[in-house]
Length: 69
Image 1 (tube, rainbow, N blue to C red):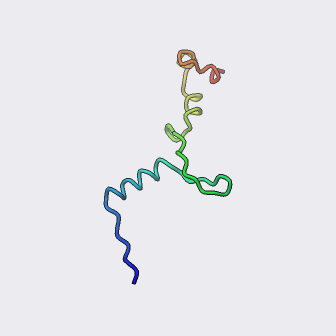
Image 2: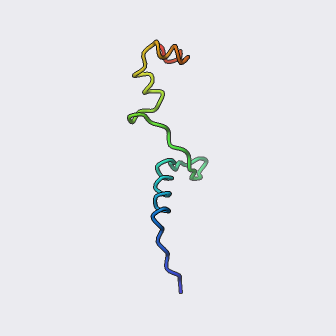
Image 3: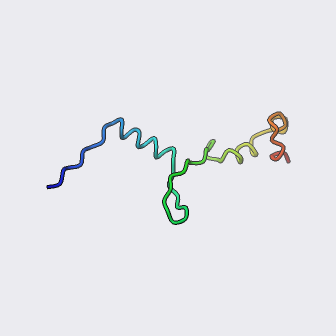
């Protein structure tokens, strides 16, 4: 007879949810890999958020000349 599966504890379920939130699964060379999710600010990637919202003085102070138009 097969042993019944045991349920995860609340701490294990929370750890699993937290891991799913931090990582995503992608296929690389035909294999499934876990990679960190890209960081987002208000749903935008960091580079796009900075290019939309930063003023030239802040960009110059932080040496981000590539974002200056």
